[in-house]
Image (cartoon, rainbow, N blue to C red; front, side):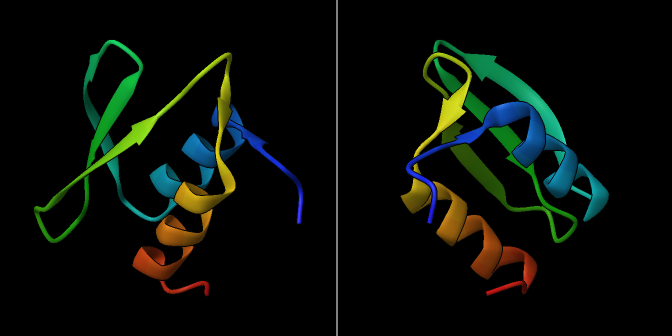
Length: 63
């Protein structure tokens, strides 16, 4: 598993599954899921840690 993935790649994936970016506060990008819940993804230097990638895959049903 790669150590980190690019946020732009992850954003394309979640938006394809109906998530929308609702706000950015500092390094945290907050997305709204199709069911109305929120999910915060911290982004540092354009990358996302593997833990968050695994959690998002569980949320969208790809895990």
